[in-house]
Amino acid sequence: PEWMHPVLGIEAKPGRLARCSVRDESCRLLLNPLNAAAFAVDPRSGAVFVADIDGNRLLKLAGDGTVLAIRALAMEAPASLSLHEDTIYLTQGDSVIALDGGERNFGDEKARHTLSVDGAQATGHIFPRATTRLEEQWWVLMQSRDGSTSGLYRFNPDWQYAGTAPLPDGA
Image (cartoon, rainbow, N blue to C red; front, side, top):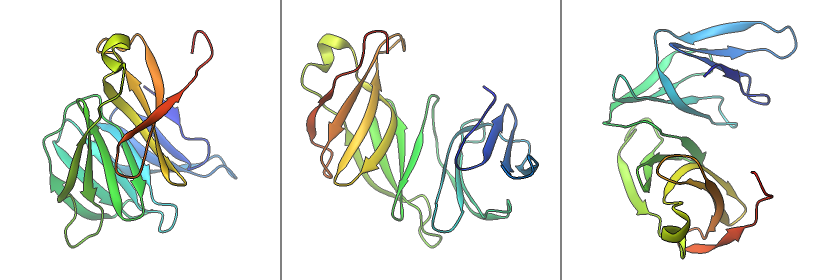
């Protein structure tokens, strides 16, 4: 899908990834060709982390698109990336995989968390699709196998289930 992140100024189109300026509405190509299935931006350094599903690789780019690190990594779509401190979190299947985001050990697996949610089997929400850390909790959007339904779940810093956030009808 074609879209632009409203805050980070990253534009994703099939086959390309660009950094865009909100001020002058210009875009600078970061890497092409690239199937950026997912990306995350480090707000501290401006580095862009990219999950390239077709290339089976994880990339770390400088804000200008210079490749800082590459790691061969088998991945399947759908995937999402998030970043907390120097750790990259990649969703794959029913798991969230913690990867080293530093340049020396870039992409090394630090931990794998299979998310278990009370009642998830009944709702079918067993696949994590997006994660974000807010204070001392992880918020995870979990989907059913066919993607037709989803729910918002909370986990503690050790990825233990902490609760469900109610969503409005039709969300």
